[in-house]
Picture 1 (cartoon, rainbow, N blue to C red):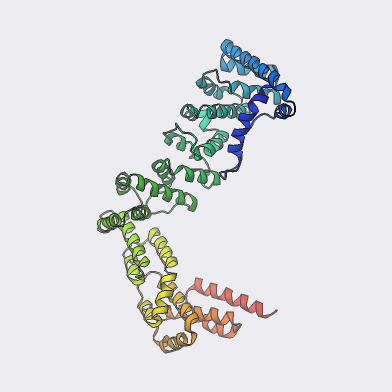
Picture 2 (picture 1 turned 180 degrees about the horizontal axis):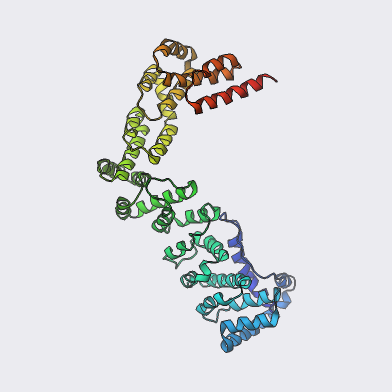
Length: 441
């Protein structure tokens, strides 16, 4: 039984599926294995063979149905293997058998477990084509099969199609997500697919991307982005349910994400949550609320008030994470405060006791030097003798870099010698070495 003419008529449908599974989508390259066929070209070059191909198609389909009715799907498969041996002809036969519309879909799915592993890819490709023709109505049955969910080929094919929302009838994604647990969490395909699924299955994706992490430990960056985006969507869809879950089991960062999502919808509701969670007995909720409050204050230009709120957070990963974000976001505010009253700003920073005050000291002094280097130098000269060494070192770091950039290596080194912090000292020494090397050419 040769199936080359069958592919003349199947080519268009197969080609369309290949296009959306392999085409201009950025979720990855499909690994669908389909039998090679040159018959599509023959059909294009010889349109007079179309009628003959249609007749052969009907005959072949009839033969397959007859074979299945006599032997069942497994028996039909075994017969095809025996008759054709390994090779392209067998691949085409398997594809055609599993792509047959007149046979119950469930029978094909059950046979997958009994097939030779190297043959399954052709069967799976055919089943995907068949499901696509039928608007994916059999996808629940397909993905509930143990062989299916353990197949890396099925996994990648399913991710690609599922991510584009083409499994219209597939409403329960949780069991399928469980099958992804063994998949590489850093895979670009997995992450991009989950991101596309978020608007449809926000709550499920949030739980899936959260289970590997607990307490205040921060997730890896890629899955952390998926988790945050899923939570934002979930909160916007059903804030009551999402917040109820968070209150029982969540990290401070999740509370921060949730409150910020609510703020994008209603600032009043976000402020209400802030006042509610600030005094919460749940430490994660309290920290998350304080984190948002600090960021709100910063957005209003109240840098020092926001920094004081940061100081109320518990020591640990979330505080460090938020302090870094706060400091990065504060640069524009620092520049404005320096522009308004540089001395006032620097004196406020020197009071100490604020998270990341060393960064603001260096950022502020650099901005001041840029604005008015002479007045900045006058202030430093008048205050250096009264500034504690732990603060002097950051002023020294700024002037060491400035001297190095001007090619004055000796002066740069004198300033560098005042630096106590080992990381800062190493950074400045590297800058001096590069400047020194550049002067030798």
